[in-house]
Length: 164
Length: 161
Image (cartoon, rainbow over all chains, first blue to last red; front, side, top):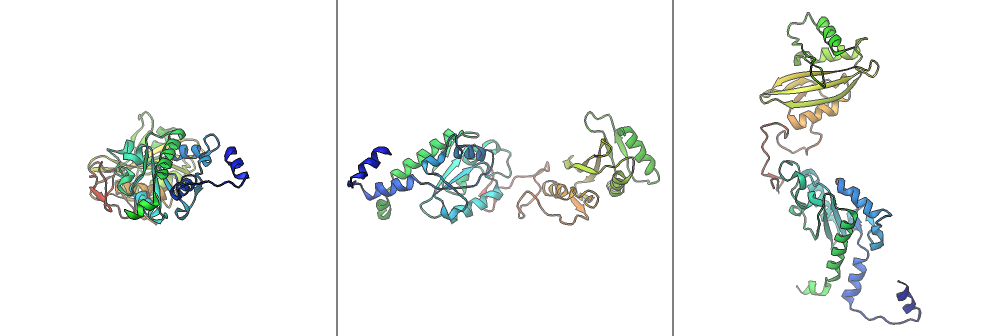
């Protein structure tokens, strides 16, 4: 950031497209819905804690769906929880994103055959943007998924979306 | 007291009751077990808790078992004072699985019995609040029974893989 700071010292002008500016702002502050479902939540907490420090990407956990941009579904989605997840997703303001973290929320994981109580993939209830494989994924993997999501946000265009 | 002594004392105490159905299986490797008729589980439990030699003040676990045709409830008891333990077991037919609730004797049994009701469908007569504890209230069936069929849909969500 040092270089950029020094450029603004002299009241310089930076020219960019509105899309790039908005997308840069959005992808640099992806607030995250704070809720953990199973063992993946431990890795998500580790990713947020000092060793991996997801906050350096602007990811701040918020405790209400009204204030967040991304929902990280971290763990086993039981059928009982699925109805709650759907409701939380519906309460999030658009544009909203979902990271499915770990095998359980990707496809049911170890419960795929005998889990009468487990939803076989959270994408049966809400749309998913990024799937992070692993059981559970390491914090690096979650951060990789987050960077993938940032790439997605970077390539979006609000104007084109309106036309379409 | 050893399981042998506990079993003998129980047999002596309830020798006058004809359908008590006491059946000791003490050579089990982990849990020496005494089977009791479900009609008398309340009296037996009360005696085990209150007798000076027994003092089973702690119900460590209450479990349900599906034996195909029969359902069983297993009570694992421990005495904090005497440092001894015993396992009590009752069996009921699957068609009408009703067991008297021991909630009035060990308060721990409240949630344990709700769990056994939730997953096995065993009804506990005299339980103050017998509703599901783990599954959603609108769930149908009792999933840990051997003949349980996983539903195709739950609230519009497909259940099988």
